[in-house]
Image 1 (cartoon, one colour):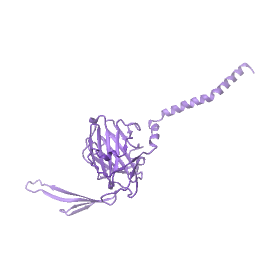
Image 2: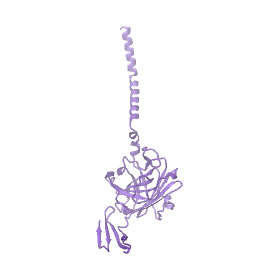
Image 3: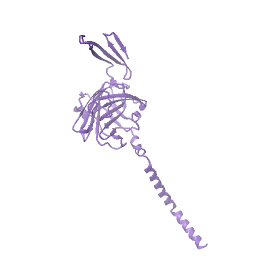
Image 4: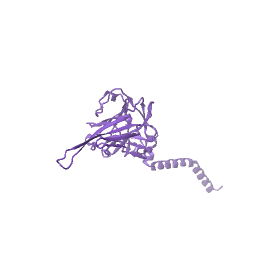
Length: 311
């Protein structure tokens, strides 16, 4: 065998010896490049969205005054919810300001205590004061409750730092949102030296549920922080109003729906442009009967005009 052929064979043997190691190095490099090139959303959604959170409502026997102070002793007994994460702008990142929520209940009401801490309370946005106002430009706190636990529908309740309320319902796992619905619930909020806080009392007749057994409800909580442009969620959702992503609320039992009949009287004053004519008044009333938490009949009575309107 000539000398040149032997040298070529040695080179071939050397290449075959180092070939497996070379393949491993190239594979590691390629995997690193592919991972680095994936989108931020792909890299951060899987570990955060895979597990549903659970929180517990604490039953109380004492009275809660809805005044926005959270100074009753019962608030110290509830489970403190603090594990919020950003929904926007940086999905899954810790929020810049902490939030605390406590959920209590008695046989007829669900109570929410909210503390929204803010290192610059003078920058809190709170402008809207009329019920059912659009609160998109205010700091706000939103509560979403899937009381049927069907993973498809929810009732939502929103307040701003002035205690202004808005509410609505959604169905179809967020594909249909109804903001016309008006629930009968109470709220009060206050701006403080450390941020703002609020209290809510939601009577159970506002919420559809199967009475007479222990309850597991879907729930989500969101804080809107206008100064930073951040939305903070307790349970991260893949999209807004995605009820099937909500966490679980447990601990509810022996609930009563409460009253089914409501009456609201009214008086109307009318004055003619003729100064000699007397002011005329009409009296009447709105009657509402709640057959269930999702079906009701409204009756308007005006005796003077002999009108009865059903809607």
